[in-house]
Length: 224
Image (cartoon, rainbow, N blue to C red; front, side):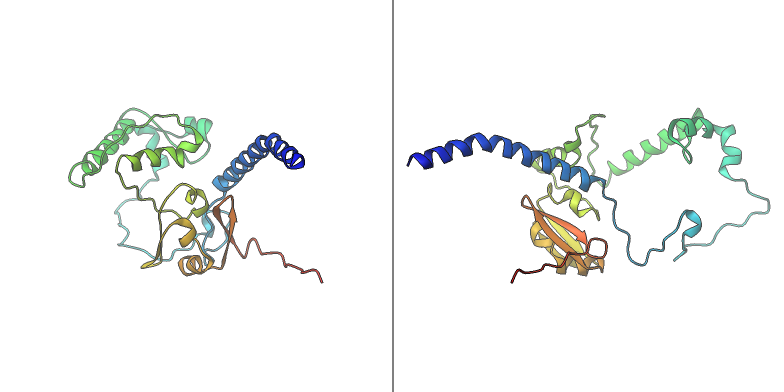
């Protein structure tokens, strides 16, 4: 009996450190998963820049002009597109809007909000500009869910949302499976959805998806 008491006492002293280690590892895992980009489909060609893009479809007919049209970079600065200031602030391919151009962008955004909160019935929300990291994944969705709202999120980033949503729907032209993340994120369903073999591991009760081509499983050698 005394030995058992000593063992329990030792476990009680060890438990806080183990719980903290678990929290640290879970936080590290979340940081890794949040930084993983979506995996492109196998038929997406590799390329160094936009020159490697492949046109697969075209809708409509390009307009023809009886004059030589200008690029937006040629006439934009006179209307309020400041590319030099934007490059200093954010890098290439951004625009700093001034004057009437800034007003036009604000008007377009206001027009979209007025349209979507009218007949479609969407609810306009003004959220805090600064939030904690976990809020983007869990707190905001949880509060909206508690208020009786249903949040629909379309994503290929399964690992990023699996720990924070109660229901997933796997689709590939039709609904393949719906249910809890552990029920939907199976190798069979994922291969039917994305057309690529996937492995699913479990970490701290949460499914984690790995692309089998990029992360092949190591062979297991059984001891004789």
